[in-house]
Length: 217
Image (tube, rainbow, N blue to C red; front, side, top):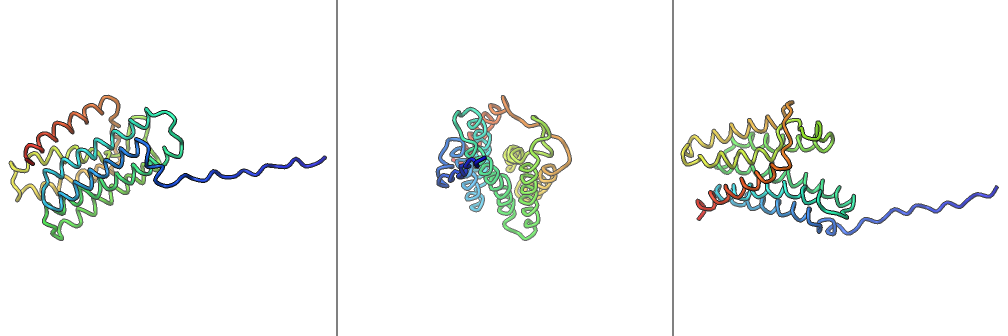
């Protein structure tokens, strides 16, 4: 019996790197990254009003990219996997590095604020690493508090800065961010907000942008 020739399977060569970033959900993710970079920039300048606006929009785009991806048709598996990695890495900047820089800047880059900045970034990285491996507990539940909730709370907290005063607001900000960091990696179940909550986040972003924008002007 003669052998049947086997046609070798030739792996499909991946497309150019930038081609994976050029679909709409990933462009949306990159818009969130730009918002976070602007927030970091203004935090360095000590303009926390503008920094809050940037953080709010980073959160909005983070919510939007997944919704766009789920509604798109014809998106390849590779684009989806690339988008998931891109989103996770951007989350580190938006919800880890950016709040850490805000804390450092508000503390005038005092060495006493360095441990807090480390905790914020470290817990963010640990949380995202855990989520990337294990995912959700179920379709609507996380382990620990999702990182984007930190920004939603932080932006609201900054509304009271003028009432509290800089002398007390700095330590209060430190404590708040440490509590949120602990909740990010705590062994507690928290709901995954989705669906109609997207409209709530959109409204929240627009409203606080108007409030902070009025102060910025």
